[in-house]
Length: 153
Image 1 (cartoon, helix red, strand yellow):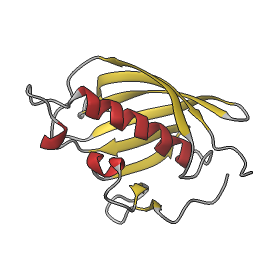
Image 2 (image 1 turned 45 degrees about the horizontal axis):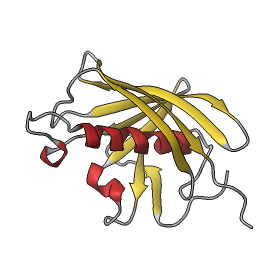
Image 3 (image 1 turned 180 degrees about the vertical axis):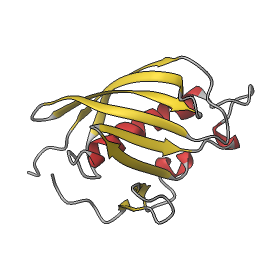
Image 4 (image 1 turned 90 degrees about the horizontal axis):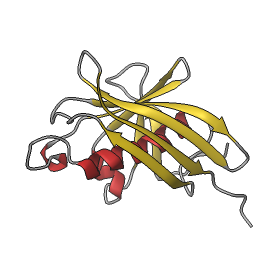
């Protein structure tokens, strides 16, 4: 894996032992819209968390589908970084398949549980669940493919 870029954040979170802060240092980038994110790996599963706020809601006062898709997409990269497979930079999402199962509540942490299905020379195949609440109710399920950055020419 290449070294992380200086504009990217991946460091221990002082308020959440065992969790890493994850995201861009530049608050004008898309990821900042999703708010603070934390990540950790347990038993081969990356756990990525965000807490949705009013700006992430729709008129039904649940998490907007677009915000959920954004969180899922970003979670793929947080997981890949946490698995030690990519650093921040030029990896890209090739596909993202999602099934919404329930509404995400505003103000309660959402957690993406992401697992690596397979890694090839240039691809990562991942899948996961979005869960919320003490009973870990499933809000969505997803799968996606990331193309890793190529060698610099």
